[in-house]
View 1 (cartoon, rainbow, N blue to C red):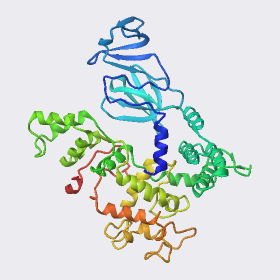
View 2 (view 1 turned 135 degrees about the horizontal axis):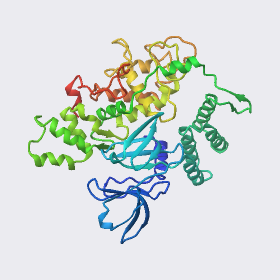
View 3 (view 1 turned 60 degrees about the vertical axis):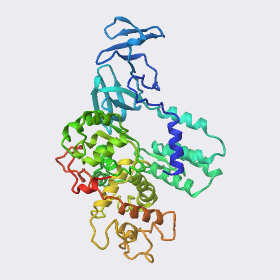
View 4 (view 1 turned 90 degrees about the vertical axis):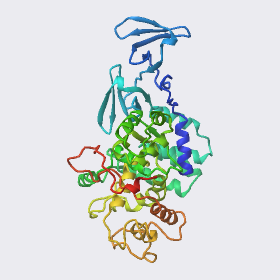
Length: 467
């Protein structure tokens, strides 16, 4: 992770309420206070209603049927506060299975919880949900970040502008960048200004450009239709790639569904690695999540891996993001005028919709892996990284052994003498060649008859799944 990305992450985390893994504790206080609660009394016994008062001696609650109940604190094992989102407010639903889902919270009621993910409404019965945590609204975050800025602290101002671009607010970002440019004119700032202006030009609504003229998008319906033909990986596919790319010497944050451990013990009871002693099997429930993930990988339990949730990029994919995807792939090869647009043959890349478009990044990674090429010049040459077509096509013609075809508008995006671009990309390919080349249990491109969550298949090579 770059210093800038880490600083932005810390800035964002500062505004987020903490999440407790202890099911007996009250979920974090929500951004929007509410008196609607569900009091857990142990087992499946609950009391639902409006919390009227709370003290060290008692809870007073008006139940959903209008009765007033008084409960002693020792009777209450869990307090779940329901949230009241404003329109369009995002939040995360924490399921009792251990999984969580991020989306626009539509409702958090006593009987059902509904969120919207990519335009699709998904609902759960209330008993399957632990709690819902709202994210601060954009306006609340904007005000907090804006008020925290200090004149002359340009690094913070740049992070703020990047956040505005990530939130798809190019007009606000351009306002901020115009101020920054006057006191801190750097290539990074000028590049962000170009990005903000491009976002405005691609906006569906007419906007004023920097000269005060009205402009509209130049994107034709045909271009949009062509772009939609590139399928993206699902969240499940991304999670599966992350599982297989875990570096157990530097593991990412992982969560494991306890129900999967039950299923694992039952399904793999005859496996030589599975302890036969019940007491040893119980230790799996007390083990660290990353150790459970390691054990499942050793068992090659690909049919149960969806019970593992990898909550951040493993090291190999983080380096792909920093050294390949952001540094030159999406700035040259993946633009709308190159392999991100129509009319360029079968090799197409996904254009990110925001600075941290995870689905675009992982999809482009899989596209690079699967790209057709001859044996002499593969896209990713793991034996001789410098001969990777991905690098050769990005070099100036006088430095390339395999030159990019002559097409209008092509410009080299790498240079062997540039240690900030070429060397990191070369090193990433070299490092991937020293890691097991996994056959992920995903299908890409997805078949028309398949759902977004295909059934996992066994990896083709068993030795590749061993950590």
